[in-house]
Image 1 (spheres, rainbow, N blue to C red):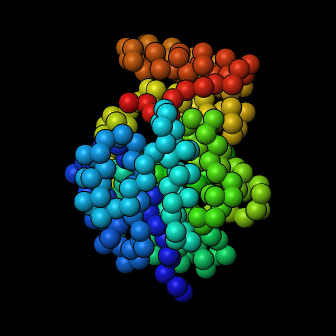
Image 2: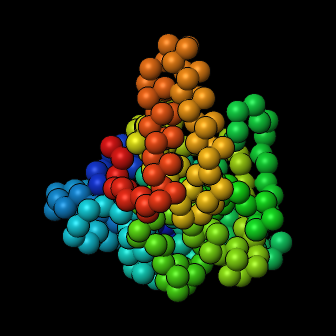
Length: 272
């Protein structure tokens, strides 16, 4: 089976040691990218030069507020390869993951594969087909690390009004439009090292944005009264446990989810 021919699209606004490690890791893949494209939202000539020094093609982000969907779209349009690897600037992948994941997907007649870290308590890898039957609005194709045919993104770009969880809205479209699934891989060989949101640090604003976007654009069931009540109860429990920040988060989410039933939410993609 042929190795995947792809360009890696990374969204970044600063050249960090971790980004350098991400680029190095991509080049060390058994199936390395034909191109590495960095969508540069820094607005800085100095930062752009640092990206170029990594050997990347620098794709300037258009003027205006940062938007995840727009960044992916301009990166895909600039990518000359038949496949696009959308990958976070905080993700490190094991050296064989891309080639192995692509071959496993192709063997099942699939054209999209994506990777996620393992769930707590999970031992080893867990891989399976994710399609309309088991898609719940949260578990679809993840833009943290996903290999997708470039033309699919160009033909139907990510919607810019979906300010967060844009990958889940696109997943819903894909599963419905093509009637086929994607190959999901949960593995400890995928490391998500976001300094602003992860195992040790979490962002209230990111969580809220994702809940709102998924509830309004992907799965309306998630903003129904029973879910709002559940959030309120979790806020009460956090208050009893003297965890004021968690309580504030749950009460804030309950309020925002209630409003989302009557008004389309709007927020900035950048949460830090």
